[in-house]
Image 1 (tube, one colour):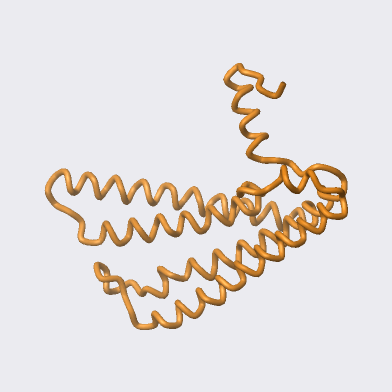
Image 2: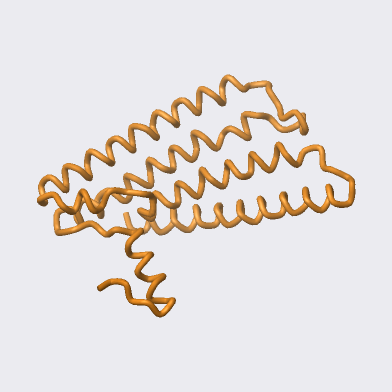
Length: 180
């Protein structure tokens, strides 16, 4: 499972970096072309799609790394059995939601058959919207890959609060120790 997690992490990280570079390049090109008075016809549509793709794939990466907003403080206040139950319930709800999103995304892609971008008629809307079911499925996989580790942590003691950990590391890097 660790090997799968490592591979998935690297793949999603590469996709996120490529998307960040692509969004940056598209926005920069759009700005430069408008500045010189030669607006790109496809800029607005493609930039919005690229940003959506970045959001979906980076969200899957964040899920795999456990970096989404959670309720670690509330869960940690519970006894071990209830902590495990809360983790299972939260994961089940998350998996259900993203499985439903994947199913709905597939239906959206089917409905869009034959439709194309307004600014680039050769590009199918099915391609642009395929990110919905793909990223939703990746989110489900990420949740399933993380679940055994999360359950082990919930049984053994308090869950890691990633937001608090990051804030403490940031404060220490700035020379302030706010952990006391």
